[in-house]
Length: 459
Image (cartoon, rainbow, N blue to C red; front, side, top):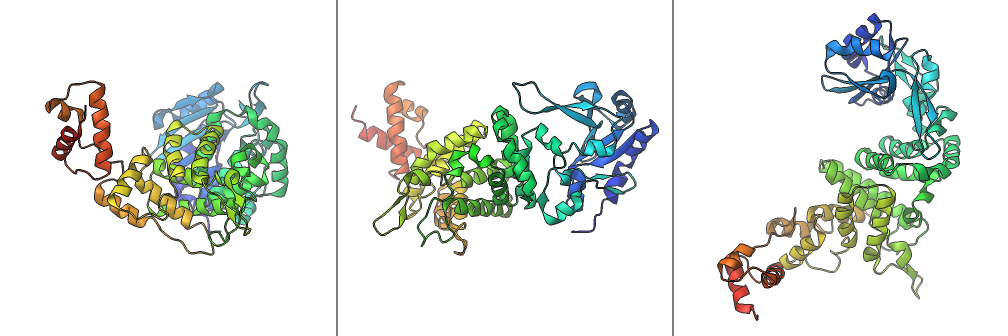
């Protein structure tokens, strides 16, 4: 564990703390910022909990620092910006369950709560840490030791107030290479029956963090398995125990392979400094790429597992899984062609025609995204070394201008109209024929394309 260096941050926050204390408040820096400081990371979001003062008085004290947005009931959470930091200032709260038809909990803000009472309501001990304005660490529940041991442990039985915390465990495990404490895993299993009431947008938020922030996505998936919540995703659960050809997959079953592929995808995303959309696409595609193996795997006469057609079979399973996790439609539109084509490099030479047609089939995903997925797939088979078997395809695609999108049509409707073709169904049919011919390399300019259309038009 690195020696914590939190005093620079506390100094930046000191004017806020001073304003809160002038009106009788007792502020603490809490939650993820303290955890990140202990890990040697730079916090971006700042959470401050203030005891002994009501929300309206607190809002008035913070007004000189800029715009303060009030969220929740009774001025329970105040949102503001301080330099590069997004700052949430909150009163301590208890939580009570939502009505029967909903799953989760609502806060009851109560400035009279003690820090121990309020911090006991937090999900994990690593998030129940606090710092005083003078830099003293408050650790009632052993969060620092759990952080050093990389153990996710629930802070109290209040963990069960919101079953979404199980999925939070998944993304925290992925971000910080953690495992569930046995007693926390057991508690998570008791919450499985409540999972059906979770709103899709809240579910997706945790899966999104798993993909965007996870350094070791495999750790998150293992935590999901330990919690018993893998059962909610039968497409993933079916990967466990599904055998693979031992020559090509010495690492073990499809589940083990998928864990390695997700970690390889995270490394590739970091190496290539992918933005959020690109990283999400790659990590989710890595997770889904072999979902078609369980229903297609058979053992041949030599005792070798074969999974013929698994790439195509994985498309519908990917669509179903993405609905389960509340993924937005744009994710499905990009991930499903990547799943379907993830074996397209096998036994094929990367000619310009092959690459152009592949880029067309992949749209709206790109051949650059596909090449990264193929690399992650090939690199998720230890002890076999990492590999980039589709690098030659990407090189051809870059030369063809097809790495980031499918080839743009050379022949446009206006070109054929100018050549004497009347608007209507015939025009659309000719444009489709022209594009197919372009992908095959029959012509390479718009002029050549128009000539080809007029010469081959049989209508």
